Length: 263
Image (cartoon, rainbow, N blue to C red; front, side, top):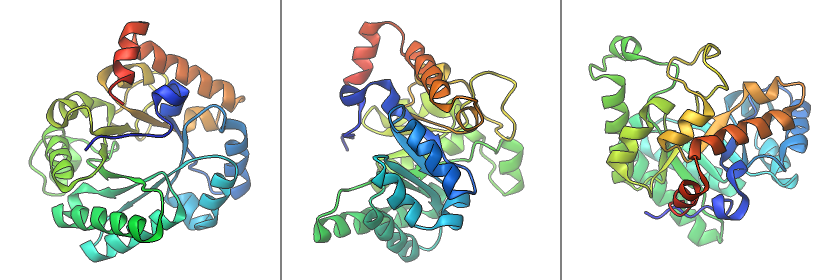
């Protein structure tokens, strides 16, 4: 499936590949960040903490301020339940949302079918639907404890392949698995990458992480970054610094143009 993003590289530059994680528990704090950053980034991630605190209204408020939303609730349930939740996410007008790839091929297929049906019936913009592979907080030992014998990379690639078979638009995966996913799934398949920090030694709860420059160089399409921006004294400048690092990851202008043509 060819992925066409209305806020892609040719429309707004590298900044549109940066997604800011609004992992906060206050509506005022979230919207203050949106007001400061809408001109600097491409999208805002609304995760479980903020969504449980504020509900669907936070999505509407962000969109009213000109921001796009990545709804990061990682749906994982029986196929019908996830499909219906996906339909409601579509009606909220989010730009993209995610489900767990481990929920099964059928779950992902029914999710895509429901999203397409809702968009056709109600004339809505179709969101991009992503599959979460293996959380960036997990390593090989964690997988073994839950009965997954394969290594992290093998499991991530297996789930990415399953997601592509189901018709998903892309995956959420750590910086360390970008290269094998790209090799397996091609350039029309989006890779959205969390677990990104400005420098080594600041990984905290992320076990599989890397820098913005390295993630873009490896082939990530979009980066999700929260703490380095949220906790900066000047969030807008922090976002600009990250965008500059991402641009360094693309290398010289001729390589940048080559990468843009694939988005």
